[in-house]
Length: 311
Image 1 (cartoon, rainbow, N blue to C red):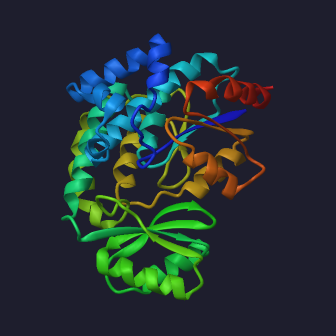
Image 2 (image 1 turned 60 degrees about the horizontal axis):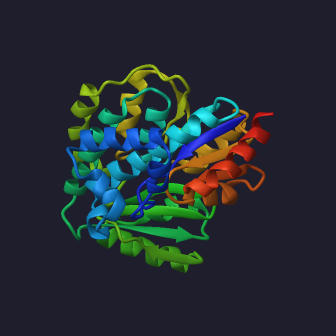
C-alpha cells in the first residue's frame, strides 16, 4: 500500500511542473483550470517568474498547488493501486484535498490565494519571525518556547531533529539564543514573510473561515491526514474545520508520517515540486520507503516503486 503526500510553501521554483505541462494533456488542463481560477497570469509565473513575484505568499501558495495537481493528474491514472491515504504539509493539505476529490481545484486555488494574502496581512512586516532549530529534542524546543516572555511557539514539527518556531521577532530571538545554549546543533532564521502557524495568525484564521464555508467541499474518496491532529478525515465539515484550525496550529508532520505508516502504507510517494518531504521521512523513520515525482524523469522510477508497494 502507498500514501501520497504534497509539499508546502518553500518548495516553489520557476518552471515547476512545466515539463509535465508540455508532455501531458492532463497537466495542461490542470494548469489552465488553475490559471482561470486565479484570474490569469499564473501559468506565466510558473513558466518564467520572476522569482520575486513567485515568492510572494499569495502567489506562492496557488502556484505550488497548481503545479502539484498538474503532476498528480499525470501520476494518478498510472498508479498500480489506489492510495491508502493522502497528506500534505501545511499548504499541501489543500493539494491533498483536491487529489482526494474533496475540493475542486478552482475553489482550492481561490482559497489558498486568499489564505496567503490573509497570512501575509496578519502581522506587520518585521514584527514576526520564524527559525529552524536543528538537533534539539522537539519537547525541549517546546519547553524553552513556553518559558520565553512574549509570543513564540513550535510551528512545524518536521522531524525528530528539526522543529521550526514562530512568533514575535524579539521572543523568537530570545528562544533561539536559549536553544543554542541548550545544545542545538544549528538555529537558522528563516526568510519568510510572516510567522506562520502560531497564535499571531488568529486574524487570518477568522477571516478565512467564511471563505472556507463558501467553498464547495464534498465527501472525500480517500481520507486525508490532518496537520492539526494527525488523524484521517473524509467528510466536508471536518475538512473545513481542520483547514481553519491549521492556520494557527503547528504542523505535526512527524505524527502525520507515523500515522501513514501505522495505517499500513509501505511507501510515501511525494508529488509536487521539491523533495523536502522525502527528506523528512528519511529522518522520521528510515524504514519507510520513499519516492518522489517532481520532474518528468521521476515518473517511471516512482511508478516502479509504487508497484512494489502495491504488490
